[in-house]
Length: 198
Image: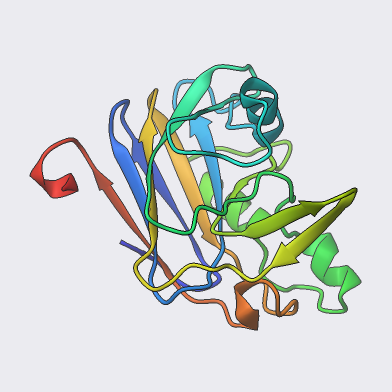
């Protein structure tokens, strides 16, 4: 399945299923949000995950937890350079309005639209896991670098519980350091253990 450049798709996952996100052309950031199927008021929380793991950025084998501090995903495999951000908020209408382009597509609006199709209407926009986004900590500053992914690089998550994953192919095209200023598609594969996932 393809998430088009600047677009969004939602992917229901059963516990134990895997979600693989592949950067088709390289250099593209994706905003990943996850909601529990049995309670959409419980969702993946980057801040609670940082508290649980004592890490700023994710590593293979770690779990991501919800706003109620319960595991929702595990980072199972990563063939990319391994840079994934958990510090930067999703781009939103206010961000683009400040840049002088009201009405620009955003990851926040992409999330709202994707959830609405599943009958979910969030009160807040969680801080996502920004897959492939390269953010470095330099003293007390955050330094954004272009995503270093190559075509075909991927990251794979395993669902700990039944959940709904939402992936936005970030539409940011005004800051050259994000998406090289030219958003491109992301591919998603949902699979269970076995040959299809090999």
